[in-house]
Length: 85
Image 1 (cartoon, rainbow, N blue to C red):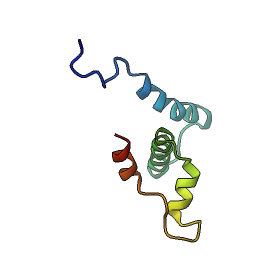
Image 2: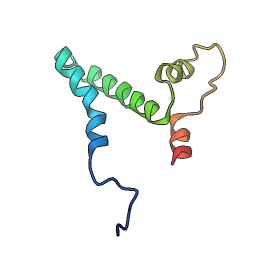
Image 3: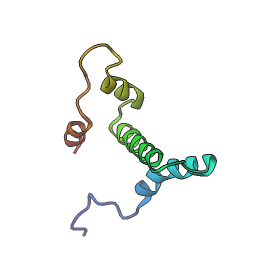
Image 4: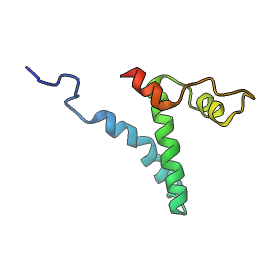
């Protein structure tokens, strides 16, 4: 009997999270600067988090950037992650 059954016995989820980044890196040859690398990593992490929460990435991004002309309607990701656990 497992003491912590909520912990998966494999690392497939972690490996799948990196797969999109590795594919993009192979196609594009990487980034030109440390700032570009950081921006790519932030956007990829944000995209993966939105996907796991069932939230459309570009909808969330548009809401955060104020593209709807109103105050943000979607709560911050930190709150959504807490609610999801």
